Length: 186
Image: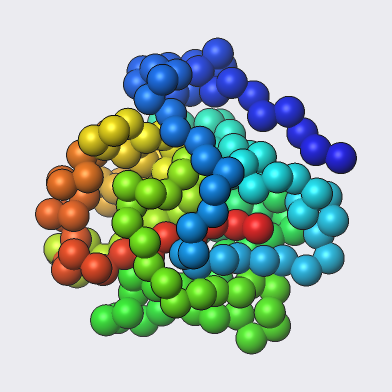
């Protein structure tokens, strides 16, 4: 049993960048993999449907208060998965562009890191910014030269918002060019 993936542009959430700008892919690279046991409803969905459910779960938050970026992203994933999946804590500095391993194996991570340009919508980015601060964002849309993030607390005000950022601007904002990790929720 699956769900119908809604057209987010028709709902107005990502209409500003246009339907052609969204790049959805069922092809999975080999980044971090998150897996929750005992969640047959969630696991019955295709990966593209799980990714879309995560993006859709961000919509009610737009412009509102989400608090810290990681706690907000955790709440979004829990809401999207109907509380079948929880993302793990962020590692301590200097590795705070990665997440902790879950010893209960409710969440499994892999050590591969891929280019942001190759990550589909619905994936989650854990990054370490040039300022030294870690940040968590969800990929809400993509264009050939840029990515649309939705996150909380980008401006340190706890507000949920989107920002369209070129890939070069993204890499320039990082502590080091490799100081980010991509995750998808399975």
